[in-house]
Image (cartoon, rainbow, N blue to C red; front, side, top):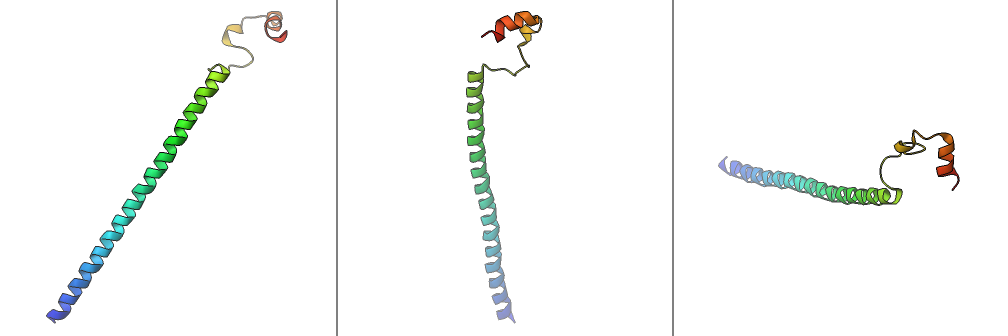
Length: 87
């Protein structure tokens, strides 16, 4: 009877270690995937910021407000035509 208990205890330890290593493998692989996804996200975010910086530099920055800038709202149509449409 003691011999069967010893064998069952050894099998329990072996399977217990297998479960522990299996769980550690899952945790480490999840950490690895999070690392690579974070790195990919950081590169994408950096590229997006560089793109927005170059776009703002090319287009003059700021949000478009419509046909003209806010300083041109008080112009009459004739002044607007002379300033922008004659070019």
